[in-house]
Image (cartoon, rainbow, N blue to C red):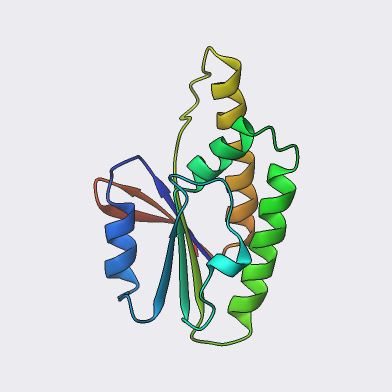
Length: 145
């Protein structure tokens, strides 16, 4: 599994497409910008690459819907996708999530919960991923090899 993070609108998706040489015929691209969860039936497992972007918005939507099991549900999904990826050498699972905190503590409770949960989920994802990159202004820095 791979994890790409960095600032909003800093070129993460473009970098992923170029770095992994992705095309639409072999890639399932799932956006969480306008949805809460990923359902397994939404994933085309016949393709060798799964990209999930907007993870921070999926987390935010779950918080807004009072989901008490956000982290557990995402960890279970990550573990499932990691196992799927490891079954075949050509398979890849790539997660893209924007950095939303940078150490700034928001004033309102919802924003604090969102920042905290996103940080915890990103820690889980970074631990499970074999490689992690930070992308700023279209330039990637490897954080984990």
